[in-house]
Image (tube, rainbow, N blue to C red; front, side, top):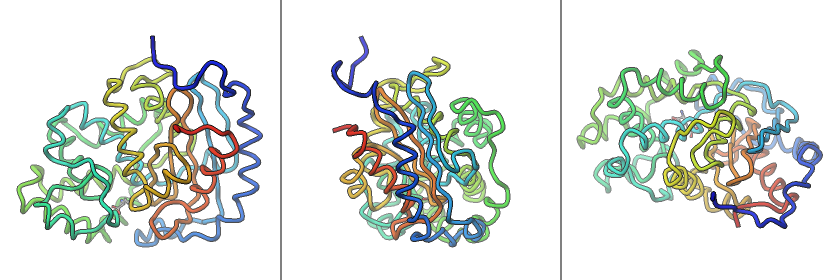
Length: 318
Ligand code: GLU
């Protein structure tokens, strides 16, 4: 029997998700102008910050949406959950020889820790870790980018998903830190692909464009022990899905993962495009998007929306 997270007398069947997200939308929308869009990638700096979208997909197939939930945005670091899914599938436990599992305590694009730790990144979600994961996907597939995009189309059941070439180009032109990270790791013999090929894959998977509904659907398998509830297809083992959720809880929000766990209490992954996608095991996945970021690089209004969601519904993983 599959493990039940909530006791049979819980109230999750009676929660009016639609009213709750509409209420949250009204409360949080004024915050959309308090954050700062990620202008270190100039193409992302052009996005109008006064937008907020929320989508929920429950494991029994119900969808709840409000605001800009169908507007495509740059998913950025949220894509790292999908590359990690592929790397875990391809490499199982040998993956952890290449990348660690600890929060970094440093900004997502920091170089300093890599020097002390001989080029082994702290976790798969900081940029150095994600570049290493892209290397693992590249060495285990014919066409890494295509493999990543196919996975995301399959998980979200949306065949139109693709990367945005203008965002990818903008990242490439301004990606001096990522290039430095990749060259530094290469100098330690930490990565196998050529640096240029690897960065091209990394920028393109970060610049994949999706909306809140696509992402909520694409994360459903993580709320359901590795199985897509819509298609019944198995993507990861139960144990692997647990491990990705654990890593999201401890490392998914950059250097503010502790604060997010404290305020929100569910595993999730953010991206500098302003998206945050999170899951509640055995129940639902939720994606919020608002492009204005806090000083750690997480959506300011999005974090507040998720905090209000777990507070108003009374559900979290704790
Ligand atoms: N492509 C972005 C970068 O490399 C990803 C950052 C993010 O969303 O954390 O800086």
